[in-house]
Length: 517
Image (cartoon, rainbow, N blue to C red; front, side, top):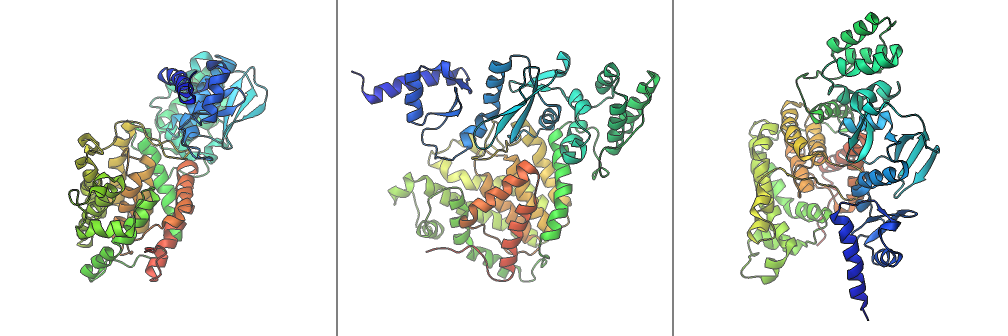
């Protein structure tokens, strides 16, 4: 008779077969009832809705949304294909959002299908799919995105609602800049006789400085006999000047976000004290905060570190030969790396205090911080030397977040831009808040992005004479929720107010974070 362990192994083999074939949305018929129940009981699959499942880490905590957000798009791909075949597509507005490289998990995915029932289907963690009964665009206007049928870029611009231009201005401006010639839009406008829409799109292109595309749309429609009246659907002028040769939508998106978000930060941030006259005393104050900073920053990342371990690392009593326990501990490697990186960051701050441009300094030296942060783990064999090579070459996901970071190619477009923006930015509070936010939004490394983001934030804070600011582990939920709001909803205010609160407390000599010995 097979033991319980052997039976579970058999069920896991069935699950592995599905995973090896890249099946994310698992139908009830993909597994026998016995295997389904066994895998459910042991936490290896999770029910999304009746008859549909996803794989999940068996040790994932109740209420942890990570596996669902990671699986969302691939799950929807199979579910929609099974339900509707080729008779569906994502709405024009949500398709446009995806073209603008904003692929965060939506609260409700809007689908068009001739078989739609105009009812929502509830999924996990407050997400849902709403399938509205609607004719589809022409077949040529639909394309595949990660297995999901979406409206192509020109069609999504033509068919999005007028209100979308004001509600999602960053997304639509980013998407519109991908279009390089009016001909991409005109075939749809002419075939559909969309004279009113043509006037709106021409006005929108005029708004973003693309006069040639706007003129070509108006002239071509008029030459075909249509009465086109140009109107601007945006509420405000485009806040930045686009580089029309820029090919990366990520770059345009970050530029737009930076401009809009910076105004909010300036309003809530305390006035900068300015570079201190006694620079050595300022650096000594940073040194005094090391233990508190390391404890809270590592604890935010769920490392189990104690003040004693942190002190042992700093004093040099930590060593891999004399203390076998330290040699084995991943936590000890993280603590050692943090100490080395902290020292490197402090040397960068010294240069900033001496008058060097903060953006330039961090651009040149952040890779040194990263190597120091993970060097001990490489030496001990916990990581491979290639892990220190630089920016990631793979996809990465953030635990419990609807935000899906920029793809690996986009990282190499955005990171140089980040440092250009930091170099040019005049307000140190904006440099600190958006430096941290854009860094973790991009997630350039496979690991360590939170620690690196907080190091970057503090380097930028000190460039204005603000004190080194520790984010308390007790405030982790508020911190992560504020970052989520900025990443998913482009609402920077909660994060700006959160950092401003911590900085203000430090300026008044009442820092929030303490070292609990």
